[in-house]
Amino acid sequence: MTASRRLLLVHAHPDDETINNGATMARYVAEGAHVTLLTCTLGEEGEILVPALEQLAADQADQLGGYRIWELRTAMDALGVTDIRFLGGAGRYRDSGMMGVASNGHPRAFWNADLDEAVAHAVAVVRDVRPQVVVTYDENGGYGHPDHIQAHRVAMAAVAAAADPAYRPDLGEAWTVAKVYWCCMPRSVLQRGIDALAAAGDQTFFEGVTSADDVPFAVPDELVTTAVDGSRHAAEKDAAMRAHPTQIMVDGPFFALSNNLGLEMMAVEYYRLVQGERGPAGPGPEGWEDDLFAGLPG
Image (cartoon, rainbow, N blue to C red; front, side, top):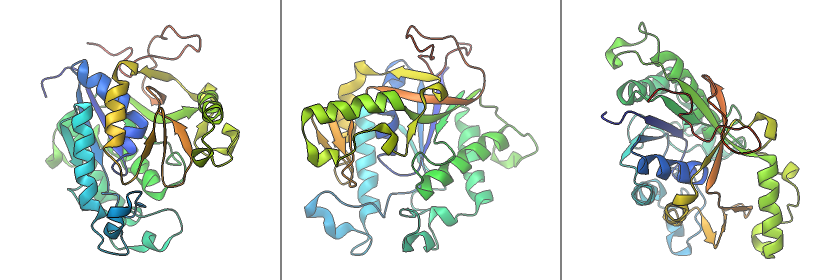
């Protein structure tokens, strides 16, 4: 790797990276950082928002995963990300579906993955990329999706194992990640987005949600540590969102998934530092960092 700053993002399905970190990824690519995306499944169990492609669904042709590889690559082209990897190789682990559904029991479901094996695959990526910063989900996977929870477990265990010289030297030289962040959405920011949706008057996206307290992934502001301003790259994020049409419906500054929960498309993205030292505060009144590499040399 020639870039001095290296960022690794670990996500569960294609589209998670764009929703959570699209502007961040585009910003760091533009600044010359090496950005690596590690996706754990192909998203085979996703609901399909494009009627003409409904036959790709898991209970029909079961070809959605392959289609979503194309969507992901198109989205990453929009963001400028060229280092795209799948945990254990494309198709090694399957989308488990939402918690408690029959697809959780599929023999290749990521939820059922042998954790030691999955972690070893991730360690190989960490030691190859040698990132200073890793981004993934919190322990609840943001909103409780089993694959998000599993991606969290794999990423956190891989960061620890990669730093241990005694762990699998065949996977490369030990590497210590300086900072680990979890994606998050501050409650106050989410409330502003909900209010903006209400003001726009599009109730098909809004589904009656009036408070951030009703949204499971809202995070208390005091737990947030970092706000990355990618507003100069809002157009790239918008294009990347539109590159996932089977999963995301974009309408102006808002988007919705198959659950019809409308959200404002964010060009400022938020994080919670859980490992490493917090860098200097940015200019905002909250005292949050404004850079994932804040406080790191180079």
